Length: 307
Image 1 (cartoon, one colour):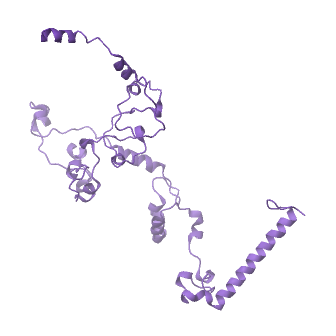
Image 2: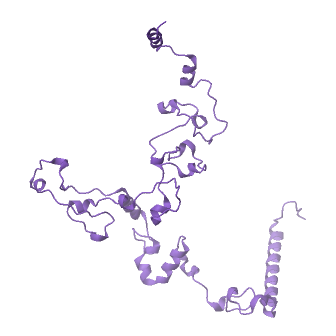
Image 3: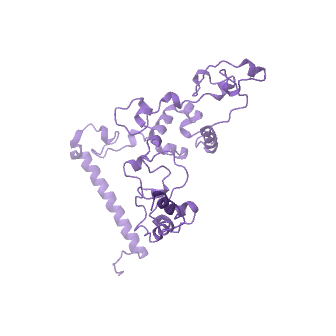
């Protein structure tokens, strides 16, 4: 048999489908995962999931990929990602989709010569100001976007340019620029924030101008504490006067324990022992009152028989 005849015989077998090909295509004999959340990095993509007909769900041993994922998961690179197929980042080692290097983006320098993350030039991330390209930007030199000086095309300004998009001069755009998503989100959030001090919308308590004018030190203390502030309990948050403070080391009033002038052996003083005796008597009296109340109203502990 000649080679041409043999090739013709092979070409005539294009319609032949083997049983193993049909089993692989229909996922016959594919066993589900023993438990969900297992790493399926080396597995193939589930064809039935792309069609929306996969019945195995989270126990499917094949990968369920949804949407276009543009950035590699930094936790998956260290083997610590627990989301699996539900992760919104890419579980695949692709140098073109690696996340940005934190140190290079923050300090403009990275000491790791074999850094796997992308080093993006900060100048390339700055966008051109659409208002400046239109003709005027109210922010001036303080604008966060780039103000690039260009030469206007005289022919385009008069109405028509023969060069079109290939013109070496700038063709300005006169439509109003659309606000970015961060600006819209900031406006939406500022409209839902209510100050707990003046009850006005648009700012937090730590940024309230009325509170800053009344007591600037209070604003600093609130921002440092970093917790929710309640103006009703403002008097409770203030420190008590020293004449009402009792030192638990020496038992005397007028100072706190961290500023006790009697040192580490202050608990051996007579005033400390006297304070300890008074505290013990008060605790004993409260215990007697509780026992009397239990005896009067018939309360008893578990296993205790009422006599």
